[in-house]
Image (tube, rainbow, N blue to C red; front, top):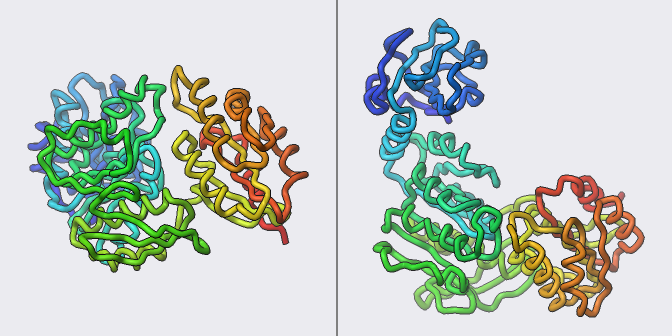
Length: 464
């Protein structure tokens, strides 16, 4: 949230937010911005008090003065601190959003908004990695994309920023549109749409439409990048969209298309075709889904003039995020595939394809945990997950967690052995005796399950 060079003079700031100085110095320099007192870590910060607490406690800012506090007329100040400018506004929400719009409009740069059920964090990281070869990039950090972080990411854009890349999640209807109100993206992307976040979206149809909010977020213009192979994405109406449409894909016709996909040491090789020109490419990380990630990232940077060959070269040095299909030789020399960041049907199937391929010469063990955010139909969806697992070559399936029995019920027709367990202690007792250099183990659980972290860490540590 640092403005490296004073960009907003105090008089303009007060005018934009329609604020009046009621106590303290009548002017100050603004180098930092925050919308929570807990986010104040430097002097010369302008703070919007968005919460509705009637009494404002200010202990946090005593060591970070001079600063300015913007408060609503009905809020009470418990104490006027020295070297603090107090600015009163009639309507905090109006003042806050006036400032957000003003600040974003100060910078005419490409801004990416990346959404999707799976791959959005990886694609966002790929885009940022490629662009950092030539540009100063502001981006969301890892998977830290909660709405409370938006203001900080927006204010991370400065006069030195060339491009911004933001991950825009969808937990509930309206959230994507809300995120776009901050970032006002010029280039949007939907990586894919699977089954997820039904807890708040209610139905898959609502979830699809929530992803479709990216169109309104783009202001029905700009550039929208879509997966040509994704059936649920095709259900989003593009009737009102007036911007540029770009497609990436493998099996359907697309502007950026991959073929000749092959597993090679440490990643995937493929041929990228664009306007009848073919490019040989490599992306670190296993799976056809990783090819989709690479395709979409290359398509995205190409929209702002980054050369395809140069993008492919940059992508070769990309480092995947931890717990995202991370492969290591671990416990008792077994091959460990760690994908314990998030779990939903789409990502589970992607992992099973990788296990089947890179574990083809080993005994294949899959630990499949319960998925979260699936709403009222979570029992049925876990049973369907089990049915889907039975379509892949898995020698031992260990269904784990709250819905282990439902997964096992769905997988009852599979040829391999099906086991269930409820706790990480039980899981450890099942796994340790059967792991050796001739086994490949897929660990697929959700980040919400903190109890399994210690076991995963132990399994991944390569023995001396």
